[in-house]
Image (cartoon, rainbow, N blue to C red; front, top):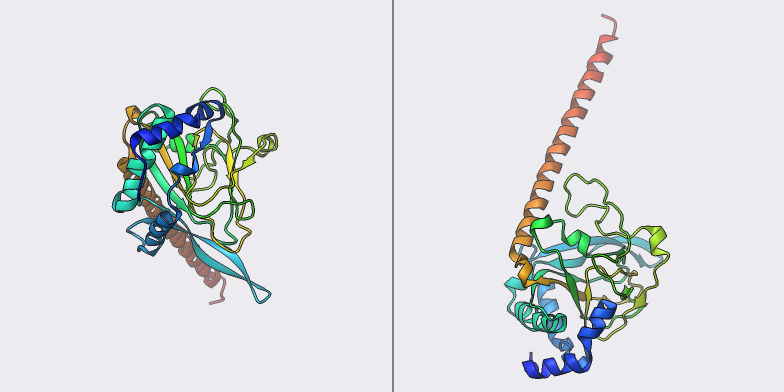
Length: 301
């Protein structure tokens, strides 16, 4: 991937006043001169999709597909995570190039915290209105990073039809952000319902969102308190985008530890669920046995 040198990058960031826009709106879009070549990022995305589960973390979603007038359920890949460190191209793009762009814009050295590639296939669901920071603090609490920003790189062209990102820009920060809901109790499920950072319905109705329509390869950045959402993909093609979370290096480099922590939490959750299922089966067996004995006791001798 051919890139501009550091001086050229700095000149573009300064001439477009990206630091000012980010400070005032908590959001900015990088000029096209700094975009990622679309053929390059699409090739790397295809490579990730072909990898086996286990080499990367993959999430699947059941969607409804209309075929010959009949709706059929279909399981499709919707998200890939934990892939940057094991892929040379993605590692160079995220740990070097995008890290440089976001650090230059924010005026402080940033490091990668986590990554996810959302595929959003045709018919794939959107994302409810939320803030990122509350959920990002869950893994390590007060012992981990507290300040976050998200860098999005569009892989495909983003349109209203295919469920582009929608944001509410403004001077959002720790002391000025919209209210969020308390999460539902899910007994330790790290991927459970009741997402931390979800925005209540009555608050959602007061927020005005802007659609971020852009070309593949475009780069945007917004801070962890920006309300954002997206709609379902109503087009006939996937709407792929990579979302990278960065935090100030002075708050620690937690990238590797984040995925270790999440993998351990998911493993413990699956083990607890297995024990619960086994216990329920045993309870049902005992109840059936008692019912059978009671029925037998009523038979005349």
